[in-house]
Image (cartoon, rainbow, N blue to C red):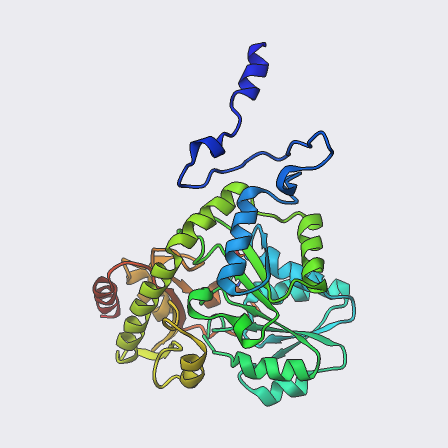
Amino acid sequence: MKPETLAIHHTKDSTEEIKAVSSSIHLSTTYLRNEDGRFTNDYRYSRLDNPNRRQLEKSLAILEKGEVAYTFSSGMGAINAVFQSLKSGDHILIPDDVFFNVHMLLNDVFNRWNLRLTKVDMSDLEDVSKAIQSNTKLIWIETPSNPLLKVINIEAIVKIAKSNNIRVGVDNTWLTPVLLNPIELGVDIVMHSTTKYFGGHSDVMGGCLVLKKNNELSEKIKQIQLLSGAVPSPFDCWLIIRGIKTLPLRIKEQSKSAEKLANYLESHPKIKKVNYPGLKNNAQYEISKKQMKNGYGAMLSVLISGNKNTAISISNNLKLFTTATSLGGVESLIEHRESVEGPHTTTPDNLLRISVGLEHIDDLIADWEQALE
Ligand SMILES: Cc1ncc(COP(=O)(O)O)c(C=O)c1O
């Protein structure tokens, strides 16, 4: 055989013989069709399925206690698929402080599909009931919300939704299945930006949808995933799988630190308000205590005593909190949200959003102490 042929045919995957402890990354875009016309393990073409994606989807479904999971190349890709599963004229309820990109997606893209929406304060169950219309097909929940950290009573919303034959979807990015399992509370769809805690190291984008049931809705989502093609690469899946292995340890430790930081900041005279579900005087503390497990999350936001400039200068004074968007990595981040949310934002201009990382909590508190001085 010539070198060209040898180079291709003697670099084949031999994982089976190697018995590697860590999974291999299968970059092949296409798979051998057997003589009988079948494909081994049903792998044909990487957009449709590949070993790394299948491994990740199986793991996500197990963690979120759903029957099936579908992965996407970003969290927004996953949310987009949920909205695409609806039809023109359908109506959805979204939180009044919904993640601003979701609002933009609905307002700037899905309005062309005639998808109707109503923004509701989901902590007011009466308002939720009142906002339901005959064509309401989905209630979309973010808990805790971004960036005000409002906690939504999922069981109560599910009850309202089920009595009106409406599906419920929850963006569980901020808590992960380690702290909350929405499917156990009756939710139909759980969404994650796996870019955040699942990846855990700020180096991979991804999203997923976990469905309670393998039914006609999951088939629709699967069809959208396969045909619209916003799928993660095998390497992305591999990185997220690697992140999953330490997810429970990371999120529990980060939550513990966030709770300590929230308590410290709450008692500081230069902080006007701390939004954190684990604070005893938080309006939704009792719901959080009942609904969450293993901690209250590693995200919080604070209202600084002062104006926008005070908030920005405090954020700049911090040395261990990197001024950057996103969350869920091992490094602590801080962000002045009003500046990134654009002209239509309703976020207070003295609000800073904090993602607590894995640095030692004593050092993080000392950093705030010097920054606030
Ligand atoms: C709660 C939440 N949902 C969805 C997203 C979107 O995820 P991605 O950036 O992976 O598209 C984000 C990103 O910040 C988020 O914080």
